[in-house]
Length: 521
Image (tube, rainbow, N blue to C red; front, side):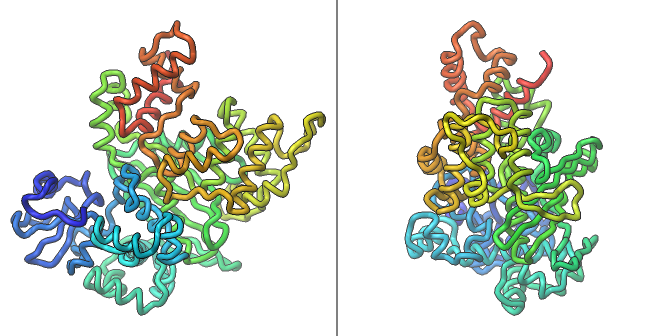
């Protein structure tokens, strides 16, 4: 809904949240006050306004379009994002995922509309009706958020901040920042503390460090361990040796060139803080890099809602209590995740690691990084399609080939890569899970399990369920969810039926059950 006024559904619930200054709702909606002309996050420490003076907005862009400016006290633009865009699968939510990734900046409203399958006019009309702002205003709000983060978190010159945030000119940046924050970029920087230094290397590569807001609780060990277990040599490294300082780094292929990111989770008291150090070929890739890291770590999840739902099930209650704030790891590249999913079919995580590392070693593009251990980029669709040969049926196994998988698997990987390269299949954040599965079904060896796994990782689908997953069956047995004497097909069906009670959070339930499958009985 565009905005909520007194007497409308959900108004009372949101008003209670701002009265309690509940930080769990920060970023999920914005509170605008008619008497001050300011919009805030729900946890703003200011005195709670009277009900008749309050309006609630789904996005900061809608509040700004209605004539409000951001609060200088609670800094609503610094809040984590909302999980609503993953939980909802309507046109508005899919558009928001694409806008966050910078599609409007790169391709304009026409490009956004084309990805969504509608006309620009329809997309503009629907977003205004649903969110209170059109795609241009929503993209402008995202740029303002990025600019503020760079102004207070880095020492980049204001001119560089403007282009890094996605603005077309310094003047456009200045005007937007003044309109949203009622302060100039220099005024915002003057109030900043603990700025991180940025550097530009001899080859023009930019390195900067940013703090990433995260909604607490954040089960950092689980998501970093998941990534560590699936590290592919050359493109990823992980270090979990320090229990209070977790590190993961990887190379990225962003819209304007190759890049790398090093992510650290630091334990400070009961909370985790996330810091990203970016190494970029272009200033224009700051926002896409941050958006993809946030999706990789599932930083915009709503742990309170997830845990409150799953803890009601006696079978999962102990796991939820032990690991509050569990996350579902995402993906930074759709093609890479499709290849990983096909390679990982019916083999162990360790075996998949060997095959993928070999593929990267033979086909991956070299990359020189200041982050230790990063030497390659994951091969692009075109490189795999051109460089990996599908063996003939009678051909003897060649020990030097990039992939030592069965012929059918190699053919599926090459075929999928060719389809990505020539554009005959396009997997992006603007798809709903059903549409994604239909597109993936055109590819060889993409069944229900693989499609559900890709949907969970690429789209951040919170309600995916992988029927037939061996590890889920193992975990379910240890939790006492299944008849251990039943046939496998019966067990898969029983578990899928049981999982319906965990909707719309089945992906998170799967993380708890996977965790149980690895625990010592």
